[in-house]
Image 1 (cartoon, rainbow, N blue to C red):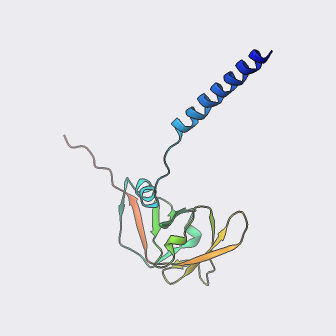
Image 2: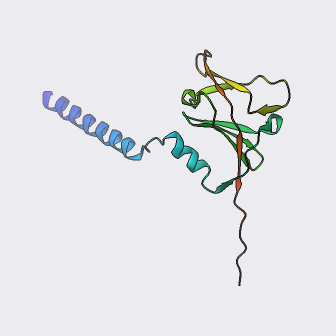
Image 3: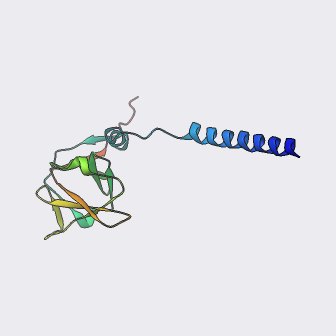
Length: 142
């Protein structure tokens, strides 16, 4: 009976080690904010910075930890590297923006609220928006 319990315990421990090892083997290292942004923009080219974007045309926004906010409008990604407070950016934050017009501009601020508690965490001051579009496809020449 003691031998059976010992054998069962070893079997369970070995099984747990295999499952844990498999999970660790499949875990990807977390990218830095700069690496994550570079990956998001890898097939895009930067355009001329703009002061404002039309917020109703924005379909989504992505917070890149301690780096930037990326606003997507159609096929264009507008990268916003805040002029102040970028180190406060956290991908788990909710962005709260108060506007007087339909445009989000480089003179505006965005409040950061913790997603789980709803508490205010700070704010970022916006800078210029850099549009990134897909590089045009080059037709093969014969």
